[in-house]
Length: 88
Image (cartoon, rainbow, N blue to C red; front, side):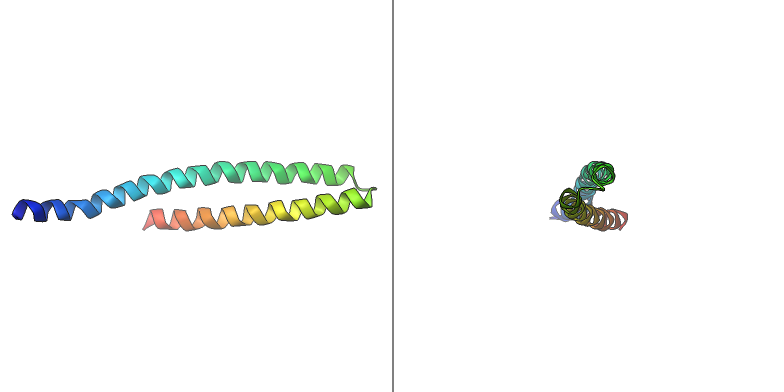
C-alpha cells in the first residue's frame, strides 16, 4: 500500500510534465501559424497598394485582409493563453 501511495504522488507530476511538453508543442505550432498569417497579411498589403485604383478589387482585398487579421488576433490570443498555462 505504501508503494501505491508513492506511485499516486508521482503521477500528478508526470501528468504536468506531459501537459507541459504538449503545451510547448502547441505553442510552437501556433508560432508557425502566426508567422504564416503575418506573411499573408503583408501580401494583402502589397496587393491592396497595387489595386488602389480598382475599387471592386480593393474592397475584396480589404475584406480578405480583415478576415486574415481576425484569424491572426485569434492565434495570438491562443498563444498568450497557452504561454500563461505553461508558466503556471
